[in-house]
Image (cartoon, rainbow, N blue to C red; front, top):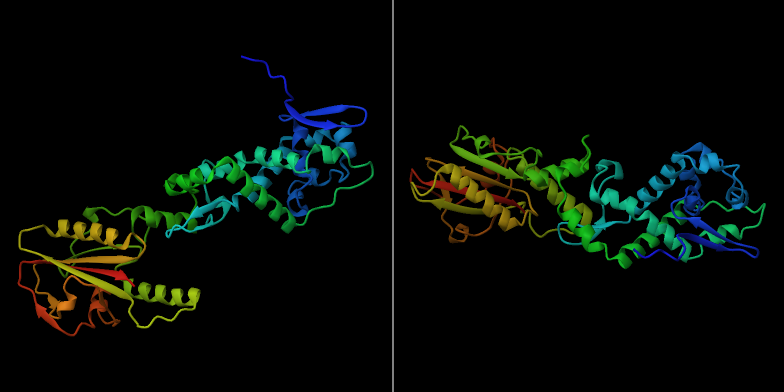
Length: 357
């Protein structure tokens, strides 16, 4: 293997000497430390008490017991990783980029994006060297002159710009996209959080965030098999209405109608499928139809006389529903506003799929 002939650290050119600060030395993190805002530096008191004039810190060993302490490096690393994390961009359900939802501490320490926030720190340090914030600048500060504290906003703007620059130059965004799209349950902290709850709901395709098996889709007293995604089958109508109100509050847009759900109906010939199979088929179809962007419930009726709309538009089409809250189950309440009904022959499996508008 060829021997490395170039410098292994950061070079500082002074009138009387050339100084090299090894990249793996404790003092190599001082450039990042002197750019921290007061609010973050005071997280560890000994570091906060380091002189703001770097002259003595760089040239003497008087403060080595602080700079060489593992807590000093941990302070710098945690502060920069936490700040860089806030500028990572991930895709939402519609493919638009946004900040990572939730707080940093709601994700596990071995979540790849969490670890990437630490891996980016050496790149940030190198950017400091290349853009006038490195050791050459610190060594040029005369004795007795202090480095002013950056405000929190100044620090945030600085790290935001540098983080975006590193991600762009290193081509990390496709990697970040892949990590986010393929995250697992283990990427969330073990303690409960909104981040974990939301992920578990999507992971298990239900509102409770708990896994659902076909064994759990037991036939109810009305001879129905019911399954739901991103809502509770007993309160889906209320949840659909809440979603409509939240949309209006967020966007300021008034929709032309009071529609809160759309229905798809399908029926099967006697013996064509079992009720369990029909419910599973309906659930998979609803997932494809909604692209998992809308809550929905699937209700499969068995061996009962059921009502089906005689209006031709109802068959195989999406039909708007109003609200009436007398029936026990949400799908009953959503369907009570149908005026034109007829009986289905006994022995057929009839299915309703209701999607949030």
